[in-house]
Image (cartoon, rainbow, N blue to C red; front, side, top):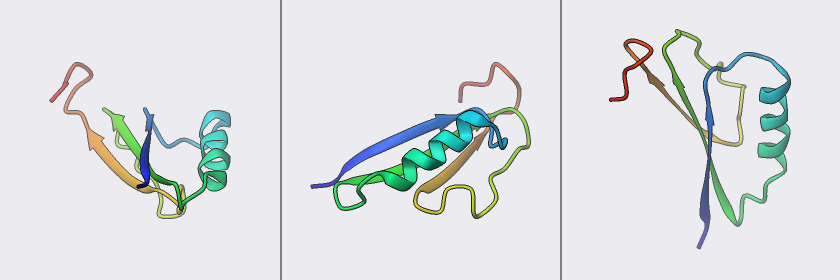
Length: 69
């Protein structure tokens, strides 16, 4: 049985933390884990199709900063 791992990001900027997520995601054993990247943001930043090719990417856009729906 494969376990699920989810990484939550506030944006998809090309910074140090995002690059480290990419390195980590690329090295995780796919036979043992399902990798998911989830963006929760009130900004309109969207990942490009090559941001995290080894993971399932989902974006949830907030209508305003305090939107928790």
